[in-house]
Image (tube, rainbow, N blue to C red; front, side, top):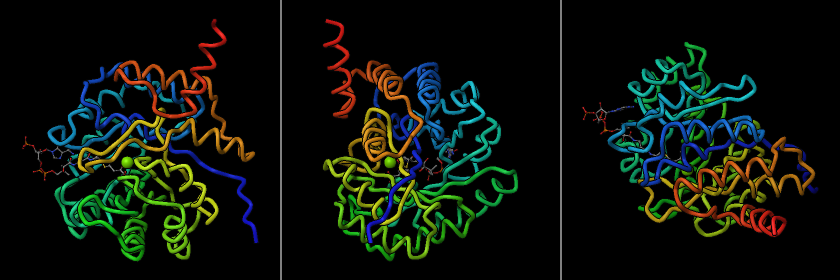
Length: 306
Ligand code: HMG
Ligand code: MG
């Protein structure tokens, strides 16, 4: 039987994943303006930063200042990454109401990214999640390298399921499975998502696909056919993880919006405003947006001006 795909939720990760690997220091006010512009464009969940060690990810060093100064839209959720209790302390101090904890399905990547084994990460996150939830803070989870590891290669779907289940046990309202290095392909995605959805409710599973090999949009569609409905994306297709060599940007939000709207799924996102937000941040990092949709819309705008 053909599955009817009629809903989807977008989680915008541009201000965090999109910027974390950029070498040029982006001014704090520009990050605030970017997050504000994304909210104005209609995005309802916007990852606003990361309370990680500034020694490990210097670009996110000003996340507290960014967070404090975003003009908060009551209809928007602004999660931030938190790697440990120190990060939680800083997040609580900044008034954060939603956090994301992050681990991986492969040991080597986890060690490189957070300097912990998978088991150690759960020992580390148990008090983080418990304290956050006691404070009424929503906790999201990430499982990196769910479709392949830059150090170990193939990753078993059963391992992904085990880590997802452990994050749900910590009380995560949603767990996002990441193709950190963008190596997955559609049939593989259907296999992994299919295994996960036998156990995990549809509403609690998100897909986080980097587009290194140009498969992200096809992979998302494949995941949606299996039943997944939550999509992480980054405006302009920005992104990358400093500890995932060879990984490029996330699937671009404008490409996801274009595809979903074409499928008759209302996203509530204003495409011209989204592309304008993308153009502004692209100027700061001195690169044109990589997405085909932004390129097409920008060419059209230039042609109309002539
Ligand atoms: P460590 O070096 O093992 O820990 O790092 P430590 O406790 O020894 O701390 C080292 C220093 O950092 C100390 O400072 C700490 O105080 C400080 P010093 O004493 O040397 O002056 N520190 C902190 N400072 C501020 N905030 C904190 C914090 N914690 C320690 N929270 C640690 C361990 C987890 C901290 C480190 O490895 C880290 O921050 N890792 C984060 C890496 C990261 O952000 N990666 C990118 C995000 S994940 C991602 O992109 C994947 C995702 O998009 C999904 C996907 O695509 O798959 C989510
Ligand atoms: Mg990522």
